[in-house]
Figure (cartoon, rainbow, N blue to C red):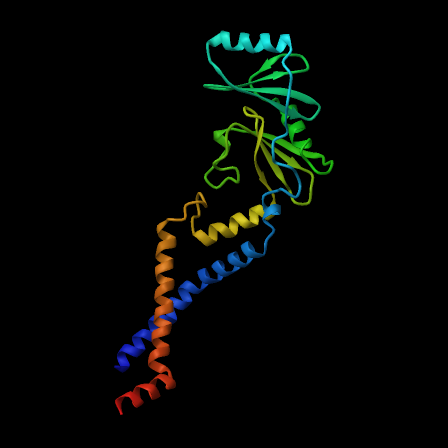
Length: 246
């Protein structure tokens, strides 16, 4: 093996190791955080119950008339009717071919979506402990960027931030009366490290990006060059090769 080849290999391995080593560190830190974390806490499930609280209901004549009038009004067939618990109020969620509407069982009024107060009440009814609300924001497409923590969520949405050390924000889609996402500081750290892990610095979800592919190839070259250096510099291997020649 030529001295020149060994020098080139050593130099290549050294600079590859320096360049890729920082990303190796990010991958390692991220892997440790992911594997040692409580995913229930990341998903906000230790603070609130995200599952729907539906109920069985009995039709009375007025409710039946309202549903019939709703179907007759624009000729859209009703696909399903579900009872949704929103704190003290009970709503019927009526899913039709092109939209969702609600019937308030208290006053029998038809509404297009949950109000701000109803969205807050929905969240508070799902909390395991009584918490105050820090602020409420109404989000549309204008407020959502590629790196926003609610990216990919159904819009519009109410962002309801709780007064809690975890800085938890609960997102409610008022058109379907569903909690769509829960974000807290643990999730935000997880998301940042995941961004570094997959090397997608915009959407943070695209794992097949070219930056990750290139760094993965460079990482493989670093490992292979290290194995090659071990092969050409190991006294054990040299002794073994000498014995084979004999």
